[in-house]
Image (tube, rainbow, N blue to C red; front, side):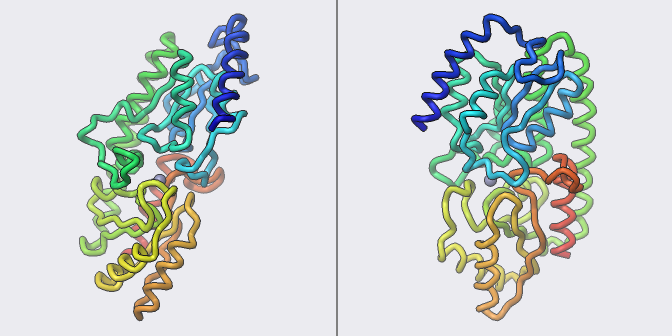
Length: 313
Ligand SMILES: [Zn+2]
């Protein structure tokens, strides 16, 4: 962390030096297309949201690629430099980016426009975290209605950044919210294909609690809210017992978490004389790769609900 802080310090000095000769909009100070605002986002969900609402007026650069675990992600000196030079920085908040807190604090102190989309969500909508070091569960994108609030918060930031195009951002937001409503309806519709007792979702880490509350699934994760904590053997045993008792058909691996824990769980179930299959891979803390059908937030959520319902039917 010391290293990061000192590089922030150096970069702050450079930024002060450089900012004298660049104004935000036409600066193109990261070499992007002229006339666009440079927006840096942390997670892939936020990159996608910012592209959807920012439209033609922003150049979005995401720090984390598909499959990257945001709980463990550390900002490199290059990342800090990008954020320093950006017109706006967007992050999730609620300690999702657990290793980047001090970087955001430093940026905030430097007067940079930074938006934590979690600030747009009323506290009573947030789930508490069982993890003592985190107050709320940060996986807010798994309840589409909460993600709508996050989108509204992002649009507020864009309008602050670029007052000239307020109308366009409002229009883009309106369209995006309609798409999110359609997604919400799709998830509910597919869920109806499952008998109530089959609506049990077991995954590698506790990313799906908002999903469970919003769409009526009993959700169990092998690891905690953050992937920083390891799953213990007693966690595996307990969950294995639960699977055998409830005769759960499938458990799921996650795109941003190694699959070894879920495989250990499957073995533990087998040792008790029951077979649980791996129902497929869910995108948890990142959206899909380019070229997959899951390269947008909406595509990712559709892919997840299809995988879940098809495996548990
Ligand atoms: Zn997570």
